[in-house]
Image 1: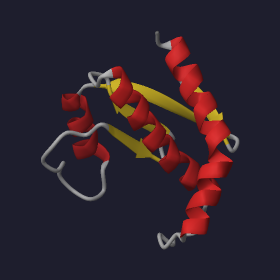
Image 2: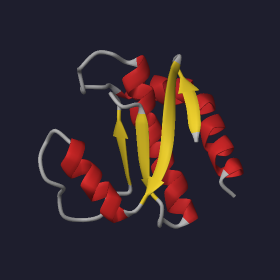
Image 3: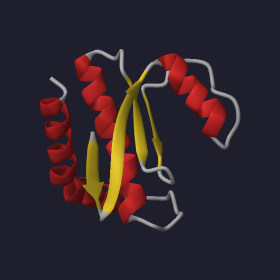
Length: 112
């Protein structure tokens, strides 16, 4: 599914764990995939979110919420500082809620 956030066209793609690990090997800058399972990945420069296609629907929804927060933060907060205060987090959550939940609702409506 494609969606637009802050005038950027994004894509959500469901892939297998094997494909997820290959994507990391082919593209991730910080080396080899780590042990464990990857539920989702967000690549800001490709404007793509990958989600594990085999996740239970509730975990898939939670994972997409998480990945969309990476997307939102990357699109709207351009500073590199990772030292967010509680007030910052509350503002981010409050201002992103409607945008992210609309994308989630559209995604699961179109994929069911």
